[in-house]
Image (cartoon, rainbow, N blue to C red):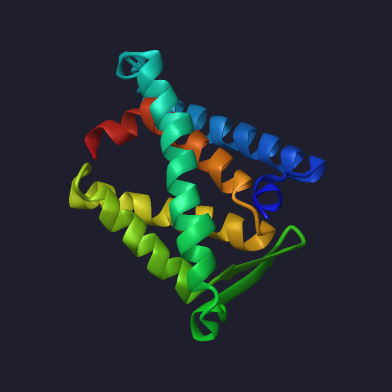
Length: 161
């Protein structure tokens, strides 16, 4: 069972690689438009980088997606999608279970971030949950969460939250 949750296919690796390039392009475009460049002094140590990009995503995704979301999806009324669309041949669905778990995830972050920062965590959490729901595995959500945190360390926009 654990192997199934962590397995990732070659197609998913290509998709994640494309997502990384898109994220870097958006970050560069944002920096160009706003004439503000990442302040790398925020990445003050290897420890910060390892915690934010590896340790926290692994722990949080296992707790919130592989356990909490998986268990919440067992409740049939919470597993029925409330929003659905087709994007690049992939059915994108948002379930009440994902919204509930994302709200809990954002609330858990409120002790560290401001309330606005916790709200900013809610929307990426929806995406992490959708990754888990689509693939049924936690590894894609861990990777995207780690990349999101890396951009948070680098992007000046996150300094204001």
